[in-house]
Image 1 (spheres, rainbow, N blue to C red):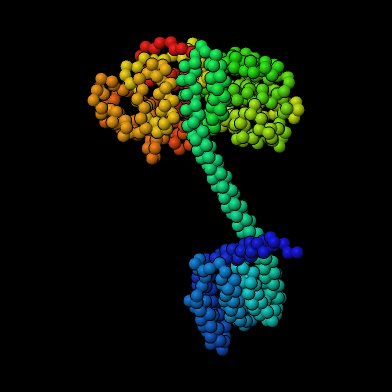
Image 2 (cartoon, rainbow, N blue to C red; image 1 turned 60 degrees about the vertical axis):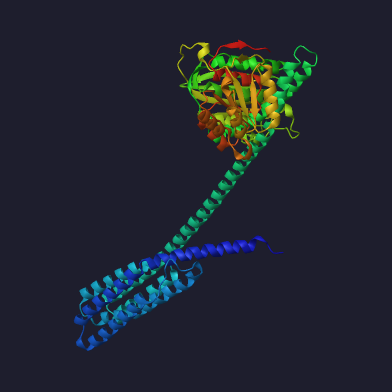
Length: 607
């Protein structure tokens, strides 16, 4: 049975050999004109020398012979030759033509050696012989890339010299003949070796180029797949965030309406489910934001014990529910890092350790190594097999979770850890033994302790966003909401009205212009402009809001709300400098954002 891969392999080999031959042909033709002109000049010089060094009876023969050599050289000089534009398939023809011309030139030059037999001066004979051999050796070396040309040029000329010296006889001539023979053998033998080396070098070069090309193709394919994955995640996340945002808003409004009634517990269950789904969507958002480069670390001196205390408070109950021991040991160490991002790394690692530890416990400890600090998260869990050590940092990959148990998350946490580690320049080391546990180690620079109040440590945003207590600001005017989704407009309006806000919700720029141009609009000024980032028909809320503020001279702050997670759009959002909330937005997140936008007195809000 025929091997289906054989024809393709033969084609590749034939093409490779043809490329090697083309390089050899290009090499010899690169010095073609110089070699022909040099040979012509050398032949004329030897002819002039022989004309005055031999008996007059032979001079006419010398002139005739030199004339024939010059004619052959002129033919070689003006005949068609190889150029880089010649197709690859014609390389064998030009290699044969070059070999034929070289053989013809050598054969026409060989009879010149016969005139050495009539030179009666031993020193002159020796000198001429050495000059001929030196010139011949250099010419043969130039033809090493083509063996046929090397033998075709080398053997006729040197054979004529050897035969002439041996035929004339005498100790000196026999010595010179022997020396010329040895030179012929050694030069051609070395030429064969050099030809093999040149060929092997070219084959290796072309194979490396082919491997590099395939590698570039694979890298390009991987990048395309990664970009497609990112676009898919962004599109899926956006499409999921829209209804989730409406559900969260309606749920918050319903919770306020049913406060202190028995039905409120159903709303609480609903909001817990919404929060769980929102956490999963936020994980995908984190991936997109990191890939987009919109997350910029702000390194500063940071006390680790403050982060460790927060970790302990966050995960103590989860560990207790699983009957695991959680040990977060104080160290008194300070490091230089970004508190928000470092906390996110530790949060994901501890959360991952607790999920994959059925018994025993998890330990978080820090120690110094010179000017560096190691933070280690150890567990006594199921461990990670060596062949899975690299894959666990891939998105959506989970060890021993073929059924996609939702209690173990989405498999994104460690991917976020790896990205954050690269961003912060905190190397991550993994050591694990299946069935015995896993240790993750983060390495970061040590910092000197410094006096800092707890208020100066930016940890307030590290806690889970599901806070139930928040503050509601007083607005001196209306809220103008622009969103093309009717459900979201209704949900946002219902929620904000429960907190006493006067809300006007419209679908787009045209409706907003109508509202702002109505009579009496000055009596009800706009105190806050809220825009969805992606509006109908490709409009962007940022541009719409900026046009409205400029046209109507609105001093009201603007807040963007978006479900976008595409890296390119995230970059544009970050560059605009306008505060942004990512859907789904809870009531607490919304109120906190408004508080930060308006510089007014605030009053405590209800639960």
